[in-house]
Length: 369
Ligand SMILES: *Cc1c(COP(=O)(O)O)cnc(C)c1O
Image 1 (cartoon, rainbow, N blue to C red):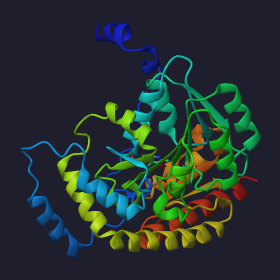
Image 2: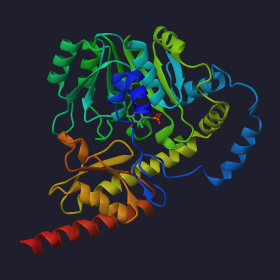
Image 3: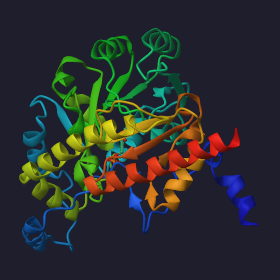
Image 4: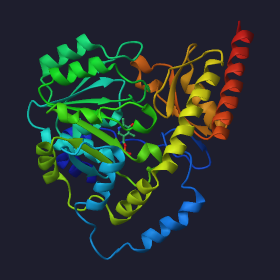
């Protein structure tokens, strides 16, 4: 009975989608979701809780989050003449952009492999979706992109910089070309900014169609849900009409402001993660049959040259380690797995388990011959 009602009323574009799947992780070493593995240092926890004591839970939060915005502008280097808009995670901002620009014949163009939410959000907001394949080495295929932009005239182009799930930064000159050739908005998604040591933020004032997005999630505050976008104030004024009035709750406003006042703590943690990323990369390079791709983010994509990604993923989970299996996506991600950089101990446990699993597969193969 209910199924008929659902069938009748839920929009067909929505019915054909599958919800974003988050696997169960309890009891596992969690290296699947690009979280910072380090908690807030204990000596800061008490001061943080003291800050929260001032939260008026009975009142609506400041709808403009003025204090937090001022702090963000200063700590993130937002150009003074640019507009700034906050979201409940940058996922909310992607949705807001899509809602603002959707319409018949309007499309969102991005690269593949890329961030899964671009496609999902485009579809449920009623935008056509255009995916343009990266080259084998995950670099931008500029001629293909320029042709697709010319033909599709997309309302929105999304580029994650560095890209997820591949981890690389795209060539700056190619990105510049895309910004100039695009009739609509180009969104540079800097979710991994804390690890990239490169950015487009300072260029926002130069291009009327450039939006730069960041999030506090990957640098260590995934639980807070705070993302922000920077663009020409005229764009931001329009997007602000779509934003629900109190999208940033009072606990997030206070906690994020507190965290940004202690930015050096997060800078130390992310620097440590960058260093560990490079050791992890070297360790993966040393495992026969494993081909890691260089990363400017807090994760590493790697390919199993003899295949078997599903089996290796399962064996790792049985060994208590959860990473991300991308093999099912096919295309350039065939035989690929992605691991988030964890603590030194977590990375060591992962490398140990992977080594054992790969050696076992080698032996089985030799025995089978
Ligand atoms: C993780 C991620 C996001 C989402 O970040 P939230 O702020 O946690 O919603 C956006 N874009 C990319 C490329 C990501 O990897």
